[in-house]
Image (cartoon, rainbow, N blue to C red; front, side, top):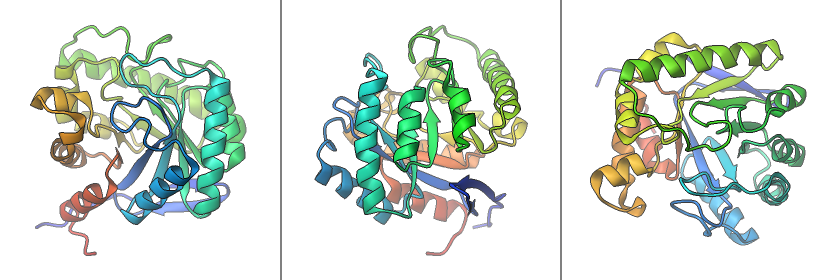
Length: 285
């Protein structure tokens, strides 16, 4: 198989430069009660630590910790309660894995700040700054890497789904990223990744069309692009299966995402994602 070229990228984690020379895998650790796939599995300290160790053992480069479910129909936790849960989880994982890179999945500035103070390294914001007007300023103040996602409305991550043709959707995403990236760089934020927001504010057909044409975004933006389709509705509803049965579909769509230029995969199952990357990029174990 012809060896694919990969342009290395890096982030600064608490003053330490971390370089990535292949696509990277972000492993999901949900300390939630009601996430669509694994809600309620990792609520005790023992379960949280065990899951974190397993993610790293399976090859995850980053652990993405979330305490508030963003599945369709879910009600986001109040920021103070989300902050309490994240502080507890981050403290546990940081003590167990002092060298691990920890990302926090939150759309609120209060949990973001408290989680970073507890030992987390970066913020993954499904709100794209829309769900908390203080988020950008908080990230600027903390000077941590930030993941900007498209798709959330000002009040509800899954609201305002109006079918669009592919060109209209890509134009909307492009304009959003261009506008927000400019604001973020103006505020002094240095490490920035972008996420087109599969499953957020998009129809099933739009999600699949967007994935197939992802290279239009990776061509336009130099910021590393993250794709998170793991076990999502766009897979299990299309195949008429359950999220528990959606691993094969996840691998298939992750392969397409990598082929179209994705540089970060956010997944529930790091091991098959790493194996997919190794095969596509002809990386020996």
